[in-house]
Amino acid sequence: MKLNNCDNRVFSAKHSKTTLTVLWLLIALLCAGSFLAAGCRQPLNGGQAGLTTDSALTTPQMRNTSLPLLILPDGFPIEQEEADTAASTLDIPLEVYDSLRPGGAADLQKLEKVTIDRVVDGDTFMVARGGEQVKLRLIGVNAPESYAHHEESARTHRGESVSRIVKHWLSGRTVYLQFEKVQTDQYERLLAYAWLDAHTMINEVLVREGLAEERRYEPTTQYNDYFETLEIKAQREKRGIWSDPAEYKENKMNTRVIYLAGGCFWGVERYFQILGKGVLDTETGYANGTTENPTYGEVCSGTTGFAETVKLTYDADELTLTEIMAHFFRIIDPTTRDRQGNDVGTQYRPGVYFEDKEDFDTVCDYIDFRRKDYKRPIVVEVLALKNFYRAEDYHQDYLKNQPSGYCHVDLRLAGRPLGEEELPKDFREPVNSGETLSPLPFEKEAGGRSDGGSRGDRPVYTRPDNAAIRSRLTDLQYRVTQENDTERPFDNEYDAFFEPGIYVDVVSGEPLFSSRDKYDAGCGWPAFTKPIAKGLIEYREDLSLWRRRVEVRSSIADSHLGHVFPDGPASSGGQRYCINSAALRFIPLADMEREGYGDWIDEVTGKD
Image 1 (spheres, rainbow, N blue to C red):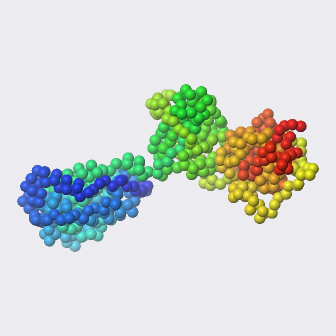
Image 2: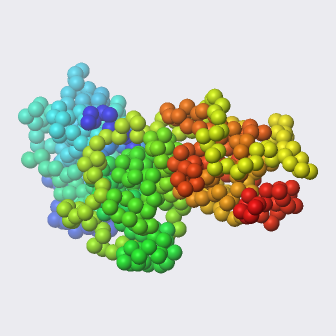
Image 3: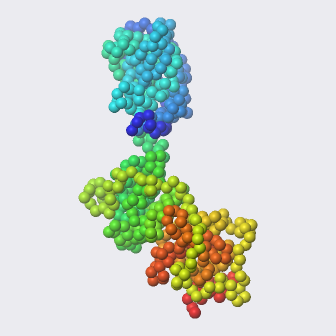
């Protein structure tokens, strides 16, 4: 991966309590140290030139505690905006440190004044000196290597984060150089402590804020004991390079959870563990059952309603739910209910269970996209999570611990990138109402009536004008019947509804289907084996979604109803009318006479 193409993101941790009390404790600690044994404000090395010996302790201007401490991730550099925010907090002079620092505040008039032309790295700058550019290396600190390092293998994301902060903080600034025993190193770099003002030493700030670690440059070691003390405090507070990326994962990642039931949960879990990218955690368990705290044996009995399920926790910025669904469809047969691989039973049914309602749309959109790839209906249930119980410990990481164990999943697929055919570009399911087809191949089992619902004193059903239709229907009903839209599977009025009665066109009221012919196809929409009578349905060729389908519409109101597929029960003619609930209105058997459908009662009750 090219480092300059890395994903740039930022995050912050909760601000630790940096208070005046802590600073005074640090003062006491430093005063007790051997290098300040002669007194907190006594200079080291006999009062070296460039340092004052009489700086007074003043009321410190504290760091802005409303700003969070910066955490630097391992896997990517922070964004420039976050770097700018961090840099803006570094300029506040903390005069309280004058009493901690060996020698106290600086006497700027005794130091060499230069301008930083360019920040090379967190601890190395190009400065204008004597009319030419010279490289400056800060003494006593060592920042992690940024992308500017000449050895690619030495570059780090944290180093780049530090570099971005320091660039914003110091580029173009005037600094004052304090030299010690050695002024240059073998690379002809200046070695110095750099001050922004009498109270703000750059070297000190970098260590104090966790942007660099303490490093001894023998024999130039005047402040090293002091820097070491600051470094310990930065490590304890998890500042900057000492921060914990795990805290980011816990608090700032785009962490989401989805529950996948795809047969034996050993294989499903192991697949996503191997996938790795974006997967934060996996846990096997039992979902959407009717009891509490089920055992594996109880689930296998088929009496509890639970499905073997993997709770998948993932970073949605690294792995999208759509990508998860694409991987999920690789390892299941979405057209088979209560069976995956060699495992048979209701606990092995395929399903996706969600906690966030927004996930429902994403999952259903993906399923809609993949319907074209299967001859049989997709029967993956998509439901809100009702409950989830962790499976016994020996089920956790089973195939990781037992690589030779049973698995119905081809785990090698986890290493294969997703193809274009697996990732939709447009979720909308279009319907292309094409050439009208003969109803004869589809209505062999339909009832003998063909009167269009007009008989006796019953009124003739007609299509209202467009204005009446628009005012009468809900938005979903209008989109389905008039704009050929498709409602969500498993989240519609009549999918799991089996009361006796008749289903009529929501637009015109013309009768269409009987409850006697309705069955559970597992596809997520109402399914019927035949219309209630011949002549009530119009059939159109539909070539959308890259395959040939047969659209069904009401013959009088021309409402889009759904599609008919040749995968229904063979004993009932082999047809499956897959119909949108939004296109139907249900008339209960008890109300049929009153609502004018009395002469259709026999088609519901089965009486001649």
